[in-house]
Length: 507
Image (tube, rainbow, N blue to C red; front, side, top):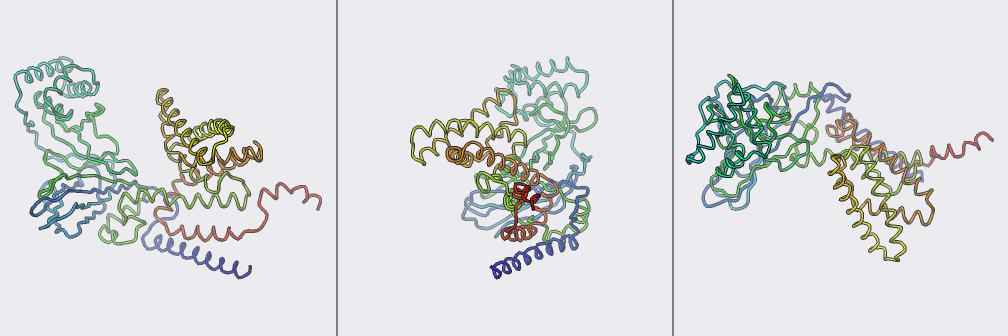
């Protein structure tokens, strides 16, 4: 027993010291602060270009974003195994160029950049104010254009008013003239609006960019318009008829040139993976001043592909929740339904928000227990009974989603984030516990599970904890050491001290 405790103590102490040492090294050497301060949201944007080769050499050209769009590029990385690579720079654009003499298999190349919003959208001064080219219009199409433009001009007193009305008519979805123009032109809404702007004598060009959403994968470029209205360029969003650059929109390219060109390949695709990290301001300044040097330093897990970064951002929080569960069970003595089911509930609560998630959980489990009590009278085998509960849980979740959608309660649509199999097994275990121990024990373990899940949720959703786990993942070694020490705890639990408080008075 002594040898075992000593061994665990040595291992745990080593892990704790090693994790804290690495953390201090990154804090002192790289300037990453341990305590919260003013943060800057830094987005890691990774573009993935995939294509199937054809005969002959392959050449891939990707337009690169510029620093003149209100965003600052901190660093850039290119991955192109076996390809020759260059960055072609002209007076007003940059492009990454991958070349290879022979490509035999499905191929993927990557471009990754870290950027942050400087809160100042800048428009280049050398944009052409020439009108865009119109397609060849038939007499019917030209008459439709002319009539539609005249109607909008009569309702407006300036180019700004005309453009706003134009966007609203396209966004409403119930204008017969718009539907006729779209069906007759066989063009997208963006192109149709641009042609009408040209017909009205208003210069415009395309804006291609990415709507930034944390953890989003397989994102594609969105297309906006930028029109020269009343002496300055204004961004237009045909999707919602808004004027001005949307929030969290990372502008990739201005102008009508292609973003991606692939020669010697077919079925090419351009997808983006996104992850957001809150980085201290002084770290951002350090990255700007030493961008080339800083890219070589061990800055958290940024060396991983962005898709994996988004996954690990959530996974790295699970050990923190595990520590909460171990502490509440071993030291406090709280009973839960399942050892680590509270962690899964906490993960679901992060996606659904706390109150909505708790309401969904109670409704699904409560209804599931009632249905499970009916199934128990049918003397089904365990596998069939659990499978039936799984189907019932899915039907309940679908019903909640449909009713919520009809009532306009969008938060409840996140019911799909709850782990279906775990919910079904929880219902099964609680039903058996009800039959063997009674409803009192079910409420104790169920309430304990929810309490631990809420505590784990509060810890996992804390911005400071998220910052530490993502930027200092070596702290997980310290958590492991603490959990190993708790595993050797044999003293009284806090709940036992409360239960035996009368004996202390007698003593």
